[in-house]
Image (cartoon, rainbow, N blue to C red; front, side):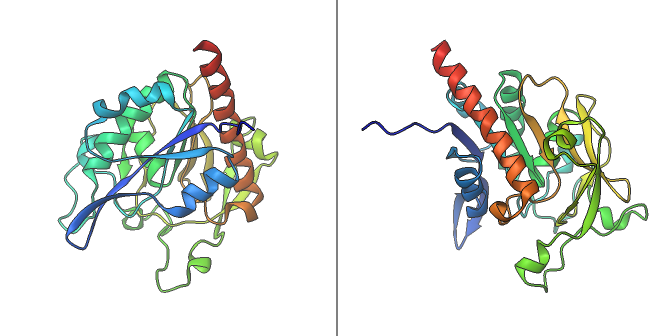
Length: 256
C-alpha cells in the first residue's frame, strides 16, 4: 500500500559548537510541532552561511519554518552598531535563512517564523531590532527567568491584542490572547512589507504577516511550539501553516 506523502517543511538549523566540533541543529520541540500539529515532514537545512547552495531547495519545499534560538540576529544586518563582544551570534544562520525566506515568500512557499525567526523576517525585509529591550524604559523585560523550570519559563505571562480583521484575529476568532515571553531582542522599526498582527500591552509588536505574500507568511515573537498540542492558539497556528503547506504541495505536484 502506498504511503501518503506529507508536505515537506524546511527548518533552518542553528550552527552550534558542541565540545570541539560544529553542529547544525534544530530543537526537537519545533520538529514535533511540525509533525504532530502541521502534519508535515520536517527537513533540516544546515546553516552554512551560503544561501545560494540551498536556493534549489525552494522549488521542492512546501513550507519553511524559522525557529527560535539562543543566538541574536547580528545587528550589522540592519545597519546598527556592532553587538557587544559577549553577545551570542549565529552569522551562518543569518546568511542562510534571510535570503531563503525572501525567496520563499516570492515563490509562494508558506513561511512561519518564531521568536528569532520573527526577528529574522523583519530584518530580511528591511526592518530593524532593539538589541536589548530591557534597556529601554518603554518596554517590559521580556526575557525568561532561567532559574525557573521550563514549564514556568514557557508559561503564558502577558496579553497581546490582535489586529481587528487581521490574519491572527480571524484564525483564532479572538481579540486578544495570552502568550509566553522568552526574548531579549524585539522590533524597533517594522519593515514596510509587513503588517502588524498583534501588539503587547507595552506597545511591542508581537506578530506580523507579510503583505506581499500570496500564501501563509506569519511570524510571532512568542513560542507556540512549546507543548503545541496542549494550547489552542498553538494548534490553530500550526494547523493553518500545515494546511497552507498541503495546498502548496498539491499545487506544486499539479504544476509538475
